[in-house]
Image (tube, rainbow over all chains, first blue to last red):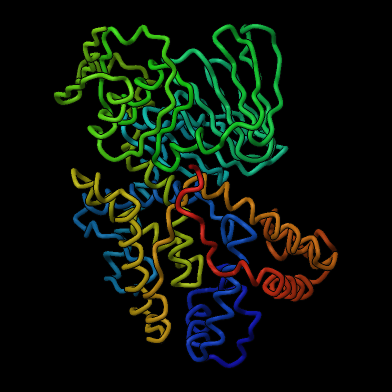
Length: 342
Length: 194
């Protein structure tokens, strides 16, 4: 089985370009000598260092295949066949007649499913509720991490001319740059354009600003049409760009990435933040409603961080810093300032 | 029944999406990484895609209240792994290989910040690639970055398919030597943020 296999065949194996039979032969060849296994590990490591995936997987195509087989399943089930998947890579046993009937069912179901499908793929929307985060890979292999209470819309023409997505909330993007198909994040206050990058965009509807923090590479930030002057800002690694409520752009270089990206590791960090912002973000993060009562008007700025674990611990930390007492019943939290008498 | 007359055909076509959002999200979020994972077991992209597709089909067939647990990353990885091992046993792949891949761990779910830290390593990788001989480098970059097929590379550079393959192999071996210090899984400190 294993004669004629050479070391260089391992490359095809790593990339997955083998047929199942070739793969089995190479597996036997590798298992016969531990040094071949070490070489395989090294090749995979080189692959891991030089690209984000081993090969270009086509998510969109897989999705369409899946939708079609799903229709096929439904048809098989209603026709009285087993609803179990026709375990594709395994044996092809099956009664001839049944297979013909199934084939007809497939064709019928396929047509029905196809007819029911809208002409173009509909736009897709991903949403996280408070307390929930979501990691996505888009069809262009851009990676996105959605923060809590966030909504990301991927329009149906994503990738045809531009790769534009619409964001309400906060998300971290790791974009594969492609000058022919610019990646754009549209938000209420403005548009963030990738120029080869990883970056964080924050634009919660409840907040009146757009904030972009660049972790690597470059992005360009444009104010939305009709908002202030139609200007743009070019941001580099460790820059923080903001478009405020009046549409004014400003940039701060050399910010601490740790602070702004802490959420991606499950920690919330605030530096010199308004109490209202801290409370709003805590509410989204732990899915609670926090009533700070009298303290809400204070101009006090907070520098505080919360390791996500329990909501009660976080509330205790906040209460300690604010010199307040806290009570929680279900989702409702009340903070009351401790009476201080001179 | 009555209002079905009233409804316009466009409205009907826009009927509710057939896929619950959570299910769609799980597919979008994990399809690629599951294919990558299963590929390590089976070595054939064709088989890996079929196995992952089968897994999602099966989940779709038995969808219901348990989806909340079943559509999570840990569950999907375990299910994919079991399917891959079952497939290998079914195809009577040598037991030594099965024993080897049975040790295959779930890759850590790297946060974007991990990716950012890994960027530091990228400089070393860029340098190593830059030091490859010109033709070797051109072929390697077209394959890994532009993700062209071997045949497309051969056409674009006007060389034979055999040359592309042998240069690709040469590039990989050179990078293996150059990047030897990094080939072990890079250890990323738990907390660099503080």
